[in-house]
Image (cartoon, rainbow, N blue to C red):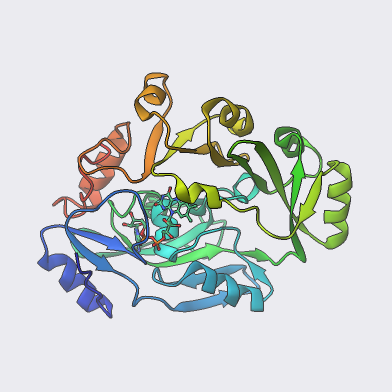
Length: 324
Ligand SMILES: Cc1cc2nc3c(=O)[nH]c(=O)nc-3n(C[C@H](O)[C@H](O)[C@H](O)COP(=O)(O)OP(=O)(O)OC[C@H]3O[C@@H](n4cnc5c(N)ncnc54)[C@H](O)[C@@H]3O)c2cc1C
């Protein structure tokens, strides 16, 4: 379906109100499932509005490409600890972990403040530009990972960090031991495409990274991110929740795929979803979920309540069945 591309807030609200059902996209490149309803792209909302070196935040619109935002920050000696080849809206709508998530958390953990759009066409601003703020409903957090089912981000303020001199990926024999060591890696990547390989992410001054390499007895070190090209040939990718820190053990047992160390999430390539769910795993189909299939495998009464508050007319229930 052709996406509508409103150019300003007035056009966006009019678009949302004029359709019975809409779904938002940034670049529309996610592979989860086909959304229903009118596609509304926020690609015209793509400005980096403010960067603060002193207070360590960036305020940005959802259609901005994550890689471009990271480049703007790089020129200001700042760093956004995420990896996402899409838009800021897609990054937050999916809320997937990365090789930085052990230390810095999921993308939702970086959101300080947001301006969001409800199903009634209202604009709501929650949070504040300071990390110390803690009052009111955290609507800005609730929308993260909700796949656009609770509304759209119109503007977000994300926490940023001083840019490290080096980010290195150290290949190690035991990622869990590395996470628990005094080196305190930021996270890492585990891949299992025939051979189980673990890389931990270490960032900071070069001297610190060199010392980490020695302390962890690293098998190799590279500033290039370990590739996950093999994952592109998976027909389906299924995200499975496991205890944080045990990604290697579970990936070795459950089969082909990859994981982000310390994130508690595995991404399995073409697994038997029903068998996983029968064993008690939460298994969410994140690539090529068929229409009408149960993509989530769980029900969330909390999401239902949030949806009835933020979208009482059910305009954004665009994945069927919804996860509640
Ligand atoms: C190896 C590999 C594996 C991949 N695996 C997956 C995978 O498992 N799952 C997957 O989805 N993609 C996967 N991808 C595809 C891709 O990297 C990302 O999904 C894509 O870049 C998402 O960014 P986007 O901006 O296109 O998001 P979009 O497709 O535009 O949006 C993603 C989600 O966020 C919501 N959203 C978008 N904008 C907003 C907003 N402003 N406010 C609220 N919600 C919003 C959307 O409704 C949608 O549900 C994979 C790619 C590669 C190379």
